[in-house]
Image (cartoon, rainbow, N blue to C red; front, top):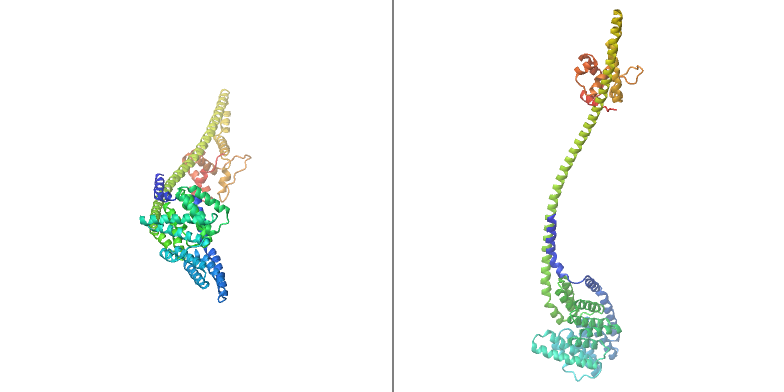
Length: 540
């Protein structure tokens, strides 16, 4: 079966690139499948957010014209927070409404807060110049939550700028400013807040303290309560730390948790999907990478994040090109395997035909052997029967010869005695009493007895095929044949010559033919079939 091994070897070589690329563990792939289920349920979480938004809008409609500007401002701020990571355009509109109310209420604090909201949503949309335009006219930021928001926005602004700017001179400046604002943020933000944890974890990671950063994030999540959006941010930070630590499997797991938390919080302004697509691409999981990058594009377009689309754009052609190569490879592999299967099928059919032919030859030889064995067995039976017949008749011959010799001795002694006594008339009478007819009848009777002992069913078998049974004369003995039966009895013994039969029975040749015809006219089969039937009558 060398051809089978050849087919398997070729198939293994063709499929080996697929196996080599499939480097993710089965457990990790199950977790990816679980995240895929979250994507399928995204509309459920979005409906919950839409319900909250609808409730806020209904309340705003109710307050319209009431003159309660503060309450309307609060509602627009809540609406902004709902839209902040969901839809940038709607969030920006909410910030504009806040700005209008702030001017109406003549509140400096509201003006600053409104400007920060506008700047933040513009930053999420990738409009960096517009962020500077909004923040530049602001007066000094007062201490408290607004200063925290300002430092947070500036930290992210310069962090994004250093990411998207490849010019070393500017990149270095942006990195320095990012560190300055990050340090400032750590000084004013609450140590228990998610902003502090993220900035501190990033700083520890940059210092090479990845394990400490990861442990700090785990402790923060364990202490809780943490919202879904905050969990997404923390898991994204942990994924970055795990990547810097060289633990790619942990990075993928954290990214998956981040994506799930984003879905539950209806967050579309996110980087986890794009980063995961890049990691999967590096691991040769082209189809999974393509799946996640398409979802990242959909999320960025839904939200309106220009910078996210720019991040994704440069990897999409790479994934699609590799996906095309993978699909072409699969087509080639399928065609190759199909060809191998066809060749294998043809070989199997050829071998099956040969096997069938060989089987027929073996069966024919087996049948021939069985036929020869049957013939040999029959011949052995016939030989045994012939030997038995010869043995019986030879024994009978010697017995008859002995009796005949004794009779001759007695006859000789009797005649000599009569000659000595000169009783010549008595000799003539004695010879007349001892005629050959009596001896012949005794010989035939002896033959009948011996034959029927060897073929006890002969008379019954013969009468079974005769239209009119041959009546055997009842002379007081069970072993008796008619003259016609003796002709066929000799035939059963293998003596078929009419001359020999006539000589043995002491009759003429014509008499033998007469006996034969007398019996054959009574049978319901052809002469040849009748002869075969007689020869087939079983012995003893």
